Amino acid sequence: MTDTLDPKITAEPANAGSDQNVTRQQQPAPAVVHPSLVPPALKRRIPKVSDLAPLMQFKKPEFSKTARLKRASTIWELRDMAKRRTPQAPFDYTDGAAEEEITLRRARQAFQDIEFRPGILRDVSRIDLRTEILGKESRLPFGIAPTGFTRMMQSEGEYAGSQAAEAAGIPYTLSTMGTASIEDVATAAPNGRNWFQLYLWTDRDRSLELIERAAKAGNDTLMVTVDTAVAGARLRDVRNGMTIPPALTIKTVLDASYRPAWWFNFLTHEPLTFASLSRYTGTVADLINSMFDPTLTYEDLDWLRETWKGKLVVKGIQTVEDARRVVDHGADGIILSNHGGRQLDRAPIPFHLLPEVTTALKADNSEAAVILDTGIMSGADIVAALALGADFALIGRAYLYGLMAGGREGVDRTIQILEKDMTRTMALLGVSKVEDLNPDHVRLLQR
Image 1 (tube, rainbow, N blue to C red):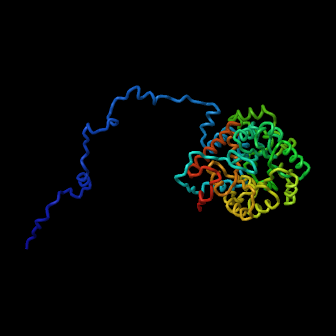
Image 2: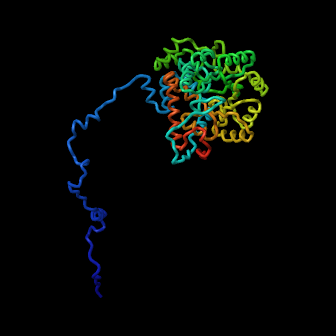
Image 3: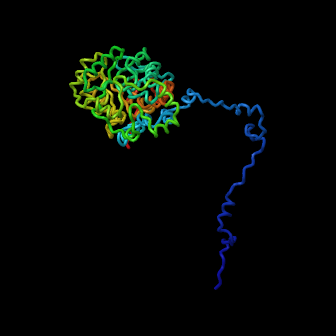
């Protein structure tokens, strides 16, 4: 029997299994476009000099401080400038926090772990950032927080901060540990809204003297800080051998070679003195531990309430219970703050605590102002805080980064960046006024 081939089956070429041939057979022929169908803009031509001229306008390099600051679009960029221009010890004093700096990282992360929920088809042609805080209007919903040793960061110090705040129409807070006196700040910013931050000392007579000086200088708000029974373990300062005033060592002299402008300003201006202390030499921690009263109780708050006739705000609130209690003892406002992460590491995060506190105070029918600090590095952070119930915010490091980057102009730039951030964020949220922000505009994401 012989095999027969099915007539439907034909022999295949020897290279029928080649992928290369199959691919070649499947490729379409290149399209041919008739020249008359090519758009005029896509036809090749020799460029004209008149076409190149607009592209050849090179911008003249600018090296002024104003130009340099204008190039900063974020607070983080101001921080980079500050780090380049400031010796390590004062920069780290500003930038650092306690122990492992967990609290500071968490505080900044908290603002990142949100989702904005914008509304559409709203008229946002005009954004109004004005708000009322502690009985007076502020052009922006944030002010400058109290910071110690400020002229150590940059020689203009509190003068730059208070004058920038005055120009912006926002409050400025002078610290007990500030390096300009209550009276000098009042003179530098006579039309500004100046507040004074108080650490209660073991010597009550000296505390009373400060309170009277603040009132006489026109400060309308007293801010008492209650989270410094002892100094936090700020390890960067320990490693840098941080002292007041800065000590010249081999390390600092070498550091100076890279930051001559800072050292020139430091050495040619009046030596560092304090708003409220006699001249002091030693570490920051030793100063706090020797001067501040670790025995403070609510009876001391009652004494302050009776003594101070203006607005009284308590800074360093970290639980709902303490928020309620200080209001019961006469506080006109509270500041949710863990001291910028500089005292107790792993402390509660003010932004996380905010909804609980505002809910609790609302349930008590309280009209106390709720202010928030710690971790704020953008105007969007402030908008998020306002949406979750804060009445106001305070900036500390953000302002100091601007100060170190460029003195008074740097502080102005900080405020400009935050204002621009807030204006843009609110417009994109579909909100034209601060009072229209509410919790529906923000969702806390779960990590």
